[in-house]
Length: 179
Image (cartoon, rainbow, N blue to C red):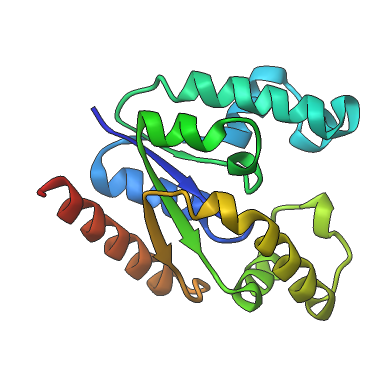
């Protein structure tokens, strides 16, 4: 039985890498935000607006506990998931956690290139995003660093760069499983 949680800041590639890694390792894939949206039949933004951050984080915690019982799965979490309640303890206690660590400049580029709408950063320029991300990362790093594997990533713009990262993470996981 295998359970891998991928954590990191928004734009770090958690879902992209998670999906491809799941395929490479023949595991199922769950995106925690998509799981919540399907369960509640509302977008994350709508849940935030309706319940406030505290209410959303309670929903997120309950949903994390549910998916933490799944087997043979890779789970990508929301960027804030590790920072609330006992979420890191749940993930570290039930599976392997991987932190995709990226520089604020690369995250800004990923977010600006992304097709996903993120209300937290809507309308911000690259010059505004970098200090915003830097400040957020400083607040979240304490939680992210509780991951069992910290994997630094660089740019992941092209398919080749993404595939190289996925193969590299996959190799790291195979090394760990043979120890």
